[in-house]
Length: 186
Length: 186
DNA sequence: GTCTATAAACGGATAGAC
DNA sequence: GTCTATCCGTTTATAGAC
Image 1 (spheres, rainbow over the protein chains, first blue to last red):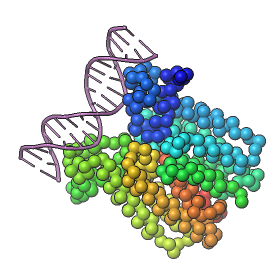
Image 2: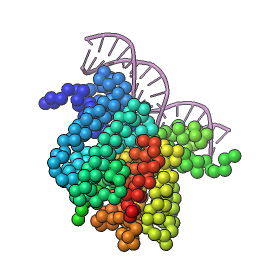
Image 3: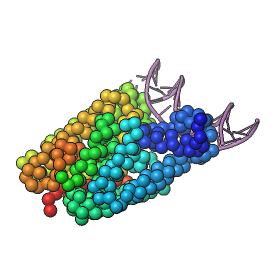
């Protein structure tokens, strides 16, 4: 028996579909069939497709960032980086999904300004968090950071986004571990 | 006066459209209006949209890889990395495009197996080329490489793919330079 | 080669009954 | 809230005239 509300199911399946096929790659019909309602019912909850996507970003973003901020800051930086990597590993799902905001960043030319800003906000949060982590790891001597940690945080986040993409493309989960390994002191 | 054949124009505009909006984000109608023909004429050259995309990959791939392989191998590794970064900078175009194969990697769930293989092939060529470059830079002492160069090549290529994405998202070209800087000896 | 015409399915969205 | 019915534009693709 399904306990979630229709609205919750819609958001959940919408998230999966976007992470699989992108904004232009799924329709209200796809979603309706998955949830078992008619497309007109979706419009009751989300008048337009953009409304749906924006709400999907909000849910995804708040959950992901909460998990990221919850990473125990008393651990050493290299262990925290491992936990971050594992978090990123979960977005792969059955190996056919990429990060929701990474996907929407690819589709950004099809989306309105306010959605772009939500995606930017998610990127920035990850970048600055990683930047601070790298700064600490450098000070501790647990991570290898060449140059300014802030810029290195942006590069590292880009590496993670690119790596989920190639992990799915090649069907290999192991690539995500290579990223953290490239920053660890050996 | 337009000197290119219709076929050449179709491929050129198709490349731009894919790099801007992705596989599901453009139509034969968009393309027809840009070139100034009817959609049925496009089917004469490319029976299906997949035929068009595959040919666009072939053109893009052979041109990009040729340019990459032409990077003077007598230079030091850090200078070659700069040239590679500048190459990647060109894909941004007016700041609204990302790598064709990076975009199609995001759209991969909408595409057939033989197109997936073409995208994989492009990724692999870049990854191995960068891996060898990093190996040489490490030996020369001009680049900072932590760990195995092969894995580092995959991470670096992912970083470039992720960085064109975020460069477009934030409208800042400078991020591409940060990547190479993170690998240079200072 | 390029066109007109057309097919047949799909797209997001709305009105109004229940 | 969810449905049926419907609008109307779009999409890829084909047939056949020129």
